[in-house]
Image 1 (cartoon, rainbow, N blue to C red):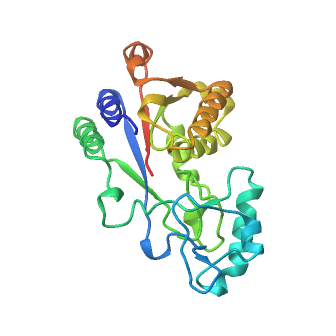
Image 2: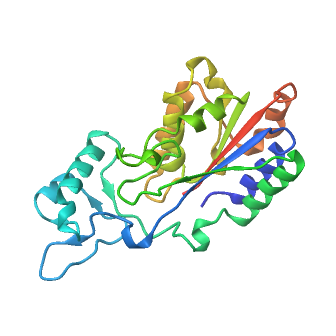
Length: 256
């Protein structure tokens, strides 16, 4: 469980110096949460949460889409996921469903963001991700599978350009193993190497999905190697000393 109280403290702290803030949140429709959700047999049985479905499973007919017209797409999709060397298709519990509390920003984090907006007399940039049910969208910057007909699945260069206007970028949110992980990796891949020290990841304001702790640890290690500042929010008193001369600061809250 992410330490949301710490997250709120960090956002309140940054409110005194930030010039802009952004929050990315996942949006899902329960009707089409996953394209592969029917096991072959006498009855159509949906997979349990956290079921991993490989491309070969689909080829062998172990799993199939409820809509048979999507079979070619599902084959291409699962193949592309595995070719990325990151993961196979994973069935997640229903979450971030439109109209449910899970789609909202957590209350104390939201309160901190609103306090920032009042102090700075500026609006918050909300970035929605996961609007297309036919692809995973872990990263706040792009979907895992680019769909030519949907610009929302492509790299969000506008968000990257906005981040680049800030002197420093602080990154917090959920989950360290997935959405934060791939958001930051995509940002680093499209960020000047000379400015990596301007990126800050607060590790105690994020946590890995249970069972994926090693993925979160690998991400943290990789970002340290890449030259990012990877610190805890409890270090922000020392951290704040380096911010006194900073004109702008950008906080990026990544939420699933």
